[in-house]
Image (cartoon, rainbow, N blue to C red):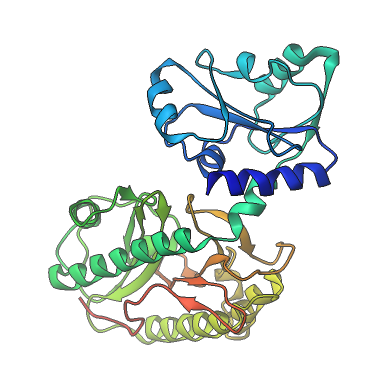
Length: 355
C-alpha cells in the first residue's frame, strides 16, 4: 500500500516539475510510509525509485519493521541535516507545515545546489480519496461512536456535569477498542452550547435545555466524527423550532453529497435554508470537512471552498445554529461520497432524544 501511494505521489511530483518532495508533516509521513512514530520525514522523487525515510535513534527498530520501499537513514532529532543529504534540483516542501525557522535551515543546508519550491497539498490531495482499507477503518470508528451514543442514552445527562460526561464517554471509547478520541470531546449545555467548540465545564446539566455532544473515535489511526443535540426535558418553542430547522438543513445537504458536486454548492444547500428562516448569522462555520487520519483534512464544504467532491472522499455534514446566551444546535453525520449519493456512516438517530 505504501509503495502504491509513493508511486502516485511521484507522478504528482513530476507533473509539478519537481525533482523531489520533502514531506515533513507526520500524518502524511505515516500515510506514505506506514511509520506510526512521532519523529520522521521522507523524500519522494519524481522517479519512482527515489525514496528516502529519516528518523532518529529512538525509532530505528520501529522503522525497520514498518517502513518498506524506502532507503532508511538515521538523523539527529530534527532530521533535516540527514534529509537534505544529496538533494539537488527543484525540491518541493510543504509550505503549510514548514516553519520560518525550518525553512531558513533548509535554505542554509541546501545552499546553491537546490531550489526550494512551495508545494503544499500534494499528499493531502492523495489522502482525500480514501482506499477500501481506509474506508473500512473509518466505518469501524463510526460504528464505535454510535455505540458510545447508545451508552450515553443508558447513562443519561441530567444532573451530571459536562466534564463528568466527557470523561465517561472517552473512557468507554477506549474500553471498547478505540486508540483514543479523534479530538477532545464536546459536551455543552444551554447557553454554553452556543459556543461551537465549547470546552466541558464542572457545571451540572439541568433539565429543560439542549445539550450538544460532539465526539469521535480513532481506530487503526483513522477518525470518526459525529454530533448529536439532546434535550433534557420539555423545550421552549424556539429551541424546538431551531432543532427542526437544523435537522431539515442537515438532511437536505446530505442528499447533495455526490461525486462532482461543487463544495460551496453543497454548503449552500444547508446555509440557504437556515438563512431563509432568519438564522443565517447564527451559522458561522462551514458545513463540513474531510475526515481520515486527521479529523480535519481535505476536502472542505464551505462558502470559501474551491473544487468539487470526488468519489471516496469522506466528509462531515454538520450545520448548526448558535443563539448567543441561550442555546446551540448542531447535527453532524459522517459520509462517504458516492457517484449517486452518500454512504452515511453514522447511524445513531437524529430524532430529538430526551435524556
